[in-house]
Length: 123
Image 1 (cartoon, one colour):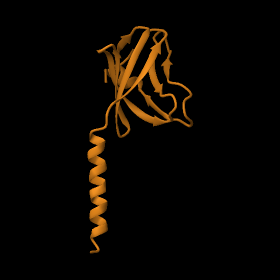
Image 2 (cartoon, one colour):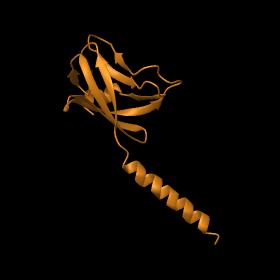
Image 3 (tube, helix red, strand yellow):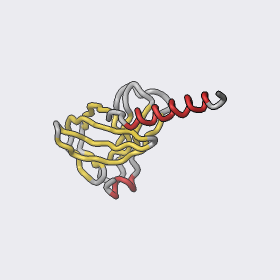
Image 4 (cartoon, helix red, strand yellow):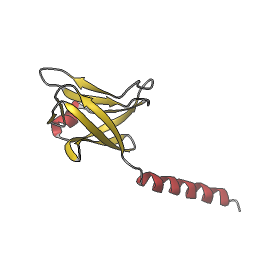
């Protein structure tokens, strides 16, 4: 009977892992007021749906215009010091180009950041 708590713990762990495998991607509406690049792809100014799938500290992010994928990139999930008041796109404006360096999601302390090396490599 001393192994009963271990078995319950292992069962609970297995259940949590299997449920996270079926986690649904999240979506957020975003407006870009100027053209920006992500993963080497130029995204024209306009309204988009950002679909992101988080796995651990990594995220796969896709910008969608209607049902068409406009750009995608891998990013790193990070926690903000406090909740973002609204969803915002942080742009790197070095040089003449505007590249997306981070997306902060409103009402949460979650952000996805994109490093310049990953953006230049295309993923």
